[in-house]
Length: 287
Image 1 (cartoon, rainbow, N blue to C red):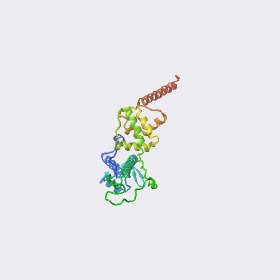
Image 2: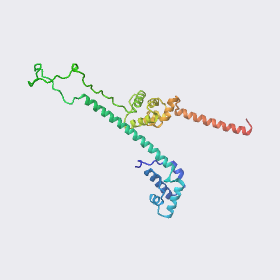
Image 3: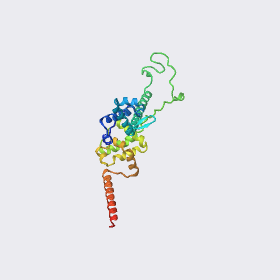
Image 4: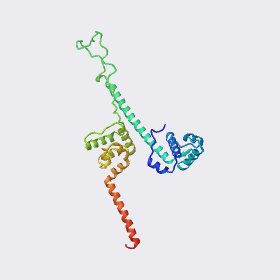
């Protein structure tokens, strides 16, 4: 099954294809779309390739061969485009991570529902026992029949033990959500939105950082003064996107803000300029 859409980076594409003709552009794009939809390289069989790009004339066939020679690498199982293959593997990894997060959320929900059903079943008896009438004399039932054997009591021997309730399991991201939501409410005075998307992103965060470190990283993320984080109200999208960077900043205590990064770039550029000036002066014998 193909992905929902093909990411086309227009700047990169136009930079590498300015020299192509209209026919070559069409052939190149059709080959890329074929690789994306099939998640596979373009076939080696030239007849199949001609069918994919709809090449009919000799000029179109030669154009297809030029495109293959310039933008594709021939391997044992097909013609590969390096950028397209990287995009396929990247999107496949994202799709797999989302699928795993969805399965984890479903399993956690199923366990919770099953636990509630078991708890309810343990509380409700299978059949109600009739209560004796207050007007019946001792030793006689309301129907006048002799009473049956007495009900077992603590004096008549050990009673069967009632099964203890099993605690309902929590998803692996529960602790991370608690840390994130607590820090969020302390910063913004309200609880964050929790939905399937947020649950999936926190599950992916735990998968990337581990259940031990993810809660602490989520808390430190809310204290980060990065302008992008602040303007987005510290959404979970950026928490997941920069997970490894945020983890490194939490572990080292060295948080780099956008203003600090700009200042560091400015100082680096100034140092490089001074080096060039000093080298020129030394060449002229001034220093």
